[in-house]
Every structure is written in C-alpha cells, then in structure tokens.
Image 1 (cartoon, rainbow over the protein chains, first blue to last red):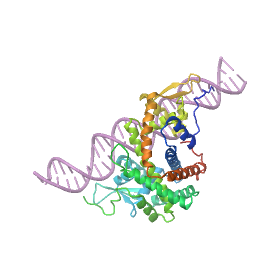
Image 2 (image 1 turned 45 degrees about the horizontal axis):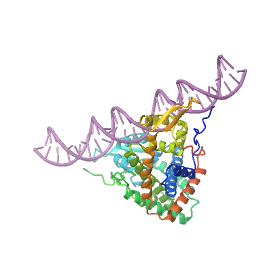
Image 3 (image 1 turned 90 degrees about the vertical axis):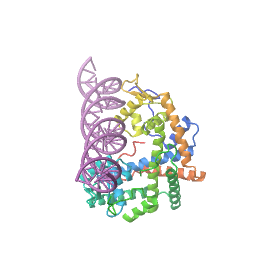
Image 4 (image 1 turned 180 degrees about the vertical axis):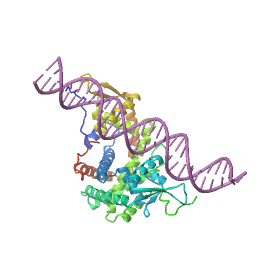
Length: 186
Length: 186
DNA sequence: CCTGAAGACTTCGAAGCTAAAGTTAGATGT
DNA sequence: ACATCTAACTTTAGCTTCGAAGTCTTCAGG
C-alpha cells in the first residue's frame, strides 16, 4: 500500500502539549498558558460527556433523556413542567421538545396530559420509573465524579470551584461581541 | 390566563448555587463541592461554545467547519489530510466527514482530490481562503479567551492549567466502568 | 355571540449525523 | 492472470434537531 510520505497525518490524537506547540507554530500571538487552559477545558468536557453517555447507556437511556429527567427532578415536587419551560431550560426548540417527550412517554419515563385548568397547556410529569432512572444515573455519575476528582486535595477543590465560578460569571455577564441576547439556554 | 400554581417551574435558569441546593434536596449522598465543580465545568463549556459559535458565524462559517480548519492547520504544512484521518481526529463517522467536506469544498475552504500515488485515497487540502478564515477565527477566539481569563492572576492560571491537565489525564487513562475502548475521538 | 389577537404546542420540510451497505482500487495467494 | 481480501471512501435509510408554518384554546373587544 503505497504511503504518501507527509500525508499520513496524526491518526492518533496529539497530546495537549503537542497541540499547544502546533498552535504556537502556526499562530504567533498566542499565550500558551491561556490556550492550555482553554484546550484542557474543552477536552475534559468532551471526555466527561462520553463517560456520562456510556453510563446512561447502561441504563437504557440517552444523555438527551437524562437531561430531561434532571430538569424535572430539579424542579422539585410534584416533578411537573410544561414543554416550553423544559425546552427553554434545555436550550431546545419547542419542536425538538415535542419529539423528545414523545419518545420518553413511549418509554414510560414521563407522562403527558393536558392541563385541565387551561387546556392550551400540557403538563409533563415524571413517572416513578423516570425518577428511579434518574436516581440510578445519579449514583453512577457521582461515583465517576468522585473518582475523577480523587487526586485533588480539599484545598485544590476549593480553589478550582471558586475559579470556575468566577469564569462562569464572567462569560455570563460579559458575552464578547455580537451583542445578541445572552443565554436563554442552560 | 389561569396559572396552575406550582406548575410554572423556573423558566429562568437557576443559578449554580440554586442548582446545587436542588441536587442536595433530591439526592442525599452528594458532595456539594464536587457537584459544584462538575456543574461549573459543564456550564462554562456550553457558554464558551455559544460564544465561539457567534464568532465563527460572523465569519460565515460554522463551528463544525472551524473544527476541520483547525485540524488541517494543526497538521502543519502542507495542510493535507485524508478524510478518514480527519474523521478520527474530529470523532465523526466517515459518512459525516464526506458530507462536511462536500460543503467545505463548495465554499472554497478546502480542495478534494485523489491521491495519484494511491488512487483509493483522497487528499483534503486547505485553500488559502480556508487558512485565512482560520486565522481570522483564531484572532477572535484569542481575544475572547484572554478576556475570559483576565480576572485570573498568573498564579491562578498556573494552578488552573495544572489541575485541569491532571483531571484530563485521569479521565483519559482511567475511563470508569463499561470497559470499552477509550477515546478514539478528540 | 362573533371576531381578532396572543399563547402553547404540534406538524412540516430541510440540514446534519450515525450505522450499515455499496464501490472501487490495491494487495495477496495460486 | 484470476479470485479474494482489505482499505478508503461514498451512498442509503433512519433519527434528531431546527426554523417556519399550522392548529387549537383562551382572552378582549365590538
């Protein structure tokens, strides 16, 4: 199989440091420390989502469905929300929400019924099975999360939480250019 | 419009602390410090991706296209990769890669040609316009990133980078359960 | 009442993705 | 040479999502 030298680019992913080095090679005005933080944040999140996806898959639900369960549980008793509230909470269009609820009703995770006091509205309510799924997912997730952070000292955890919160505030209160609306989604 | 009391759940997104409180209410065995870190990581990333999306949109490209440009530039001169290498690098199926390249060829960001030394292979090469788009995107992105981190002291940046790298190593080298392959994607 | 307007979904059509099947070129064995 | 296998895309079918148009209920006037 005639290999074309120089074409066979890294099929294996570069390490974080290799990637930073490549950035510096191709783009002069770059603070490597900043780039390292940003790149690590991105990678870390992707890996974590993959891990969550594997866990929820073992429970027979998707990450998308887990998000809905989460929103309903966190809304508190009696675990009810309207489709549009859910859609806003999850950053979906109402159309996508309709279909997602369809699936979850079919799987018995939630029920959908009209609000009798205002027949325009629809009420999505968590079933016992849905709540149980959420609990199982939480048990798996917390084990994973504890494991992930186990190398960090109490001190480091405190600092990390504080710094991340600060960054979050900054990105929420000062969206950069393109002065559109800021964050209707979670 | 008759409101059903107790139904109208938070249309506005809860703050991080409100969310942690809700978790503790619904799930006893939870370390709030861990949950805060994880939740902040997730939110921060979503917000950042929205910001990147707005920036690339002003350049007339999507985040998806930006990812491809990034991979090609970081591969170094002569900015060429095969579709399957790109697909692995970006965590896409070959099918999705085919279509994405179709679009980018139509927009003049890359070229696609057969490798004459091995006619099974295809070579995707960055055009000058594609490289220029990447540069513009980088300029915008670095401004945003510097701005995001501006409140952090040099010390804090160092610690943050180091801690995130440590977490990344942990999630890469020790995927939790479901002993499948670990990380073919970036 | 009847009509018009607004709100809350739902339906429709198009885009982008995945999994699986299909194509085509090069490598292997006889 | 010829059949077979493998590699590297491309094509096809089905899903999920989005944006826009449509439907149904409620509310406000005339």
